[in-house]
Amino acid sequence: MAEMMKALQYVTVGDAPKIMTIPKPHAGPGQIVLKVTAAGVCHSDEFVMSLPAEAFGVMGWSTPLTLGHEGAGIVHELGDGVTEFAIGDSVAVYGPWGCGTCSYCVQGKEMLCPFAAGMGIQPPGLGSPGAMAEYLLIDSPRHLVALGTLDPVQNVSLTDAALTPYHAIKNSLSKLGAGSTAVTIGAGGLGHMAIQLLRALTGATVITLDISDAKLALAKEVGAHHTFQSNDDAIARVHELTGGIGANAVFDFVGAQPTVELASKLVRPEGDLHIVGIGGGMLPVGFGATAYDVNIRTPYWGSRLELMEVIELAQQGKIKVEFEQFSLDDGPTAYERLHHGDLRGRAVLVP
Image (spheres, rainbow, N blue to C red):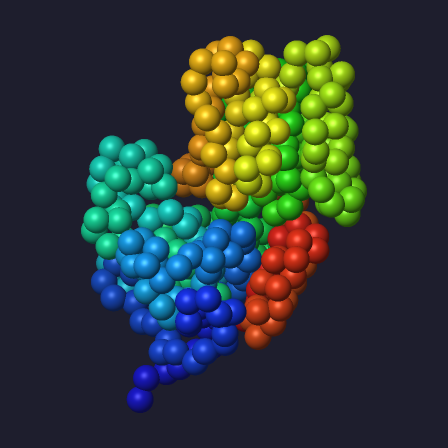
């Protein structure tokens, strides 16, 4: 008789996720099974669960789907041929899974793999069974990074909530020296990590915008120099602080139509505008649509090397995830809190 385990699954399109009992995975050749120690709750999960059934099919996804693309665990079972890790190792999961052999994958940039979808390769929690379960099957040792002595519950969200803004910020480092200004829009899971990363990596003055007073207070706590309500009044505030020119880099962690339009009015000539959030906003691109020579980017996740660098920053004490802890059984409640926008930082589920 198959061993069973609990998992938080998206079972029916349009309904809330549910705790289900499903078979426990076992490692085949080259694979690893983790005993999950923590799984992060993300707005990307909400995006997945907002899609209609036909979009699910286009993405190559099916229900029931075990959620959780931020994962950490203890190595529980090794498949034949796996020598990179030992039973009992504490690891974080590198979430973007690619083909492993293309020019992007060999650089560790599996989030950009152009062949994964066609090969049926999906990230855990975003097509493949995710980390919101008692055990998680990992397809390759290259998708694990050692956590060392870091607390997995405290640090599981580094795998997305820190990795994604880190990837975006690294592309703008040359523009964020002393005397520069960076604007972050949204002070939730990714935004509160971006503030800390900007403070750790750059000489920029950090301005944070949000519609929530509680999140603006959190932004101040984690290092924002200035905080303002995210509305049209923020345009004058940012321009006042930048001598009327605008910010060197703007990072929109919401990505809704009002925020991308606001972001376009905050960036200076030759500045960078990163639309990171998946709120569905679209920005017209063309002569006169933004200040001259602005770079507009849509960064996605990050590389395996960048995850290693993020974990190193956490080990040095330079960044820290603010989180609220929930049991796996309370996962549906965590998603309700996320939907209502009243989480402090990230929600983390612990089996």
